[in-house]
Image (cartoon, rainbow, N blue to C red; front, side):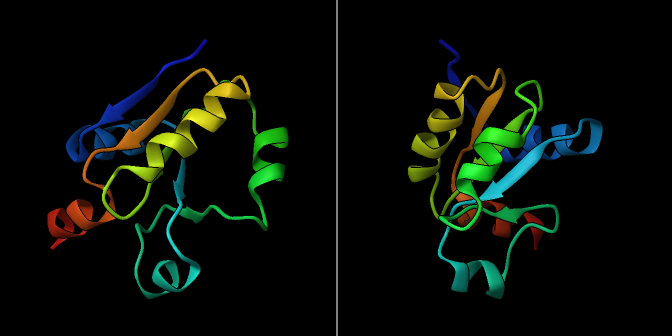
Amino acid sequence: MTQVQQISIQDAEAMLESQDVLLLDSRDPRDYKSSHHPKAMLLGDHNQEHLLMKTPKERPVMVYCYLGHASIEKARMFADFGFKHCYSVEGGFTAWKKQLQ
């Protein structure tokens, strides 16, 4: 079974620069609309099944939430569906936003 790795913001940024990573924002749609990482896609009921079934399993999946806790479970869901490289961003969007400022 694939393990979910927690990844630092610095390592996440490096990975996003060098690989075709599916970056998913698992926060509330209103918060996503207000502010999100420029490469992120909102993960929600409207697209979760499609992403799980249609995304190539070799493509790395990186998930963030508010503080980095709920994203672990979302990343684990992708791992359970057979994705080989699943990551949760430590500190979530709160920490990432501080890093971007």
